[in-house]
Each structure stands twice: as structure tokens, then as C-alpha cells.
Image (cartoon, rainbow, N blue to C red):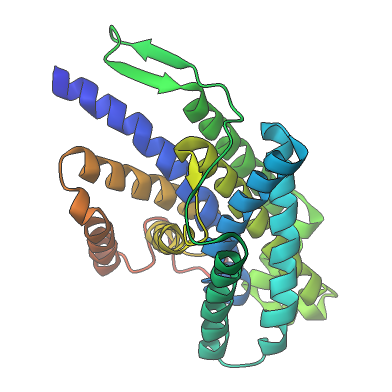
Length: 297
């Protein structure tokens, strides 16, 4: 019975981590769905979101909601700026040129922050009260921070789905993803649509950065690299270019990593995650929710 309680506790922890991976993975999948670009700078936008929240609290004494909104706004602007300056001029170039540029932007963001704030970790301000809710005679518990992570992730994923499925902008995004040339002939502004895609994905990454800071209590300029890669794996795992697939892949990635650590194999947590990706892609190359249709988002 004790093993059952351990399983439940790790399930709660895994969903918390998976929620963060899901928010980052959504940015990867949206950008890939629109312009077939793997934006490896996306993980570092998530890092910038964490620091935007950190400084908004340290300098302006904002509360959690204020810090979250500031982080999302800063990352939105940063994402659009990166797209316009670094990716738009390469729109007609080879994919490898865009990929190398994305990697270059990633390193640029990381080491600009290392230069400005140092490479050491910083304690993230405690801007959320922590309450513990115990179950099964105290053998399983969930915190108010974890509940906040679940709620914000669900709210943002639902809002994103509404934008993509129910708004004029979302219809334009789906049209560009399906056939860019046809969308252009129908009068859709391709450049604006791509910028909106980067804005939405970057805003979600910013939110993930705040949640990580609140949950783990520490941030650093190099924190975006590994989670960014794992979120990319999560997007591929669920079906790259598919919004529900990215959310599902993120949850699975978080659960896998948490259970591997919980059962004494923390050294191999990354290896297990990537091995599972290889296994699933061997069985179903399009990912769990992927199909053979061309519609991506």
C-alpha cells in the first residue's frame, strides 16, 4: 500500500513538471506548424521570462499575477523581435540556415544574461503562499503552488485552443500552416500571422518561466537549454505541429522524468526520456497524435 501512496505522490509531482514542459512545447509546435522551423531559441525565451518576473518583483514589488503578466508581455515582445530581426530575413533561405540562426540566438540570449547578471543561480522571490493539503492520513499531499501551476496551464491551453479554433487570427494561422501560398492568394498577411504565432508561443514560454521560478525557487541564465530540448522532445512525442499533442507530450515527459527519479534512477532520467522518444518514433514516426494530414494547428 505504501508503494501506491508513493505512486500517487509522484503522479502529482510529474503533472506539475509536465505542465511546465507542455507550455514550452506549445511554442515549438506552433512555430513548426506555421513555418517548419525548430526554434531552438525558445528555451531561452523561457529563461528570459523567469528573469523578467524576477526583476519585476525585485524592483517593482509586483505580486504573482503582475509578475506573470509582465513576463508574458516581455517574452511576447522578445519573440516577435527575434522573428523579425533573425528569422524573417531568412524566410526564403534553406532550413539549415534558419536552424543555425536559431542556435545562435539561443547562445546569444544565454551569454548576454550571463554577462549581465552572472552565471550563478538566484533565489526566486517567494510570491505565492505555500499551503499543503494532505490526503490518506498525510501520506500524499499537494501544495497550493502545484494547484496554481495546474490551473494556469489549463487556462492558457484552453485560451490558446480558443484563439486557434475560434478567432479570425487563428483561422489565418491554420490556413498558413495548411498552404502558405494559397493563404497569401486569399489575402492573408503571412508576415503578421507568423509574428502572432511567435508572440503566442513566446508568451506561453514566459508563463512557464514564472511557474518554474515559483515551483523550484531558483533561476539561472543557463536554465533554458535542457528544458528547451526536453520540451522539443515532448512536442515531437505528442506530434509536432499539433497543439493537443504538444500538451500531451509535455505531460508524458514530466511524468516519465519524475518516475525515473523517484525510483532511484535519476542519473538516467534524460536517457530514458530520449530512449522513449526513439521507441515511439520507430513505432509511430508522426508522434502519438500525429496523422498524415497536412493541417498542423
